Image 1 (cartoon, rainbow, N blue to C red):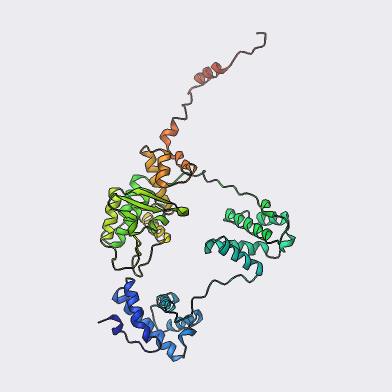
Image 2 (cartoon, rainbow, N blue to C red):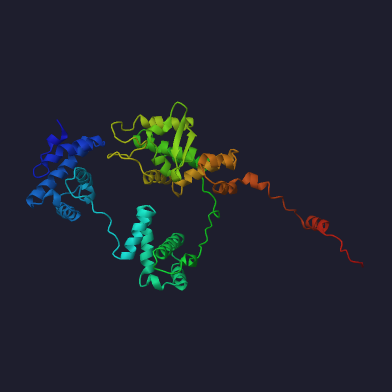
Length: 408
């Protein structure tokens, strides 16, 4: 018997129950989870029928009203997020209105700037929001036509001690360049924005030693599917130096088992191939034996439970952080495992050029930071300082030359 036949639904949503149940099953939901979702749909259908609300009238405000009343009678599925799978299903059928888009700024100039960033420059939504927020903050109570260099200096000084100054200055240059290009200012004031100090090579790369790597990997319970997934993802980062985003975008088709290589899609559309070490390949195979098979996505690493959608960089960062915390290691993100791969190669005698090839750095200067942790080679550059007062004096006397003038 189908799960949809076990849950009684009445009202305007009856015709969509079976299709919704099939869609959930295709996304990896268990029968128990599907039944819970259908019970929520049954409640929503009765609620809509009792208030004579048509499906075309369902809005975020309608969902909030339903959830507010459900909280008084139920203890589970009491947030708008619980209805998200069903609303997504209805929107795919064009039954309910599409989700409202992000509201544009009220100011006309900010709207044009928003459109310039998203349409012309094709920036990500997060960066567009950040740039528009800086533009709104800077242009508040200021007319673009009256801007002078002193206004820029005063704004920078007011935010000099705030966090994220480097990003704020970048956004400010973008704003000033935009108002100049559209003719709102007669002078390009981007040169009035000072440069912030960027000390990117001051700190040392924080890699893990061999004992810490073993402790971190030991936190993965490989008797479970989740443990095998985390173990394979961590090995890819700590052995091959993959970024969290690169691990998340791996698919089943990216691994060539015949030649033992994996295709990596890196930053800025770059592509590379790396050999798969034996332990990494065995960990991936161990996970694939437990990985859900009847799913539509070809993504290699899947979430712990349904819906089984493509992995994200956030998911990979979370599993790395959990493993570091479980091993009682101060976590600093998944990128610390990439540093670990580089420092381990350096200790085994690899050159900076070879490390740059594995990490797929476009510039050798990016890899040069790892030279600071090669203590063995750095020690050859520092000759021992002479000990003892007399030995130092004798060496200094050897450096002293006779004065060319006459006299004693």
